[in-house]
Image 1 (cartoon, one colour):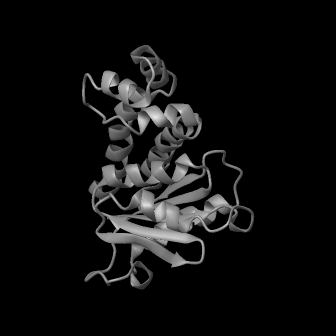
Image 2 (tube, rainbow, N blue to C red):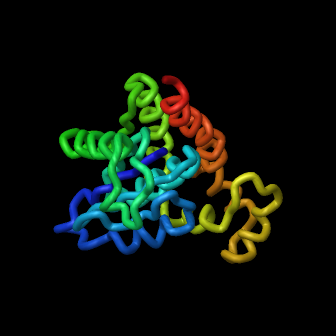
Image 3 (tube, rainbow, N blue to C red):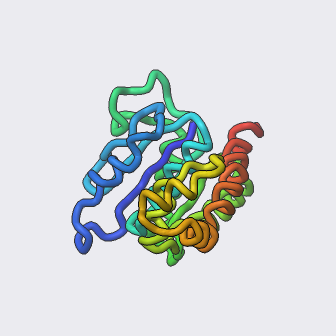
Length: 199
């Protein structure tokens, strides 16, 4: 399983952003739903590495979160609430997020698991993806939020909805490296999965 522990970087300055993050994460099918675990912290458990990548990038998008991703088992049966869960996956996620609080990483994501070398490789790919996601402008996000990965011919409809030209949509997609991001996501997910596969 894949556990995410996501801590707000500065809740005193930014206020409570947990409700918005929970809203942004609600579409991700979770084994144990994303929820507030303590004050300015969100945790959730997913089965699929692609879901873990999606959740991590959502949190990294706004730049207000430390994202710790733990790869490992969680004790079953799962409780009804994340704050009552236990197991190695949660310990790894806590270790990852604690490591970030003491670092100066520009893209605050860390991965921990039983195979440290593969966890580090997954972290490196996720950090590159996070860099792409965090550097996008508001105008680029307005375009990208209307697009669906892997669907061809959607730029015209997006342009019409936003009242801009198809060329403007095409430029925003290229500038935001949207295709590159979605091409690289499976590599991050595969590395996360490898942490579980090799015993």
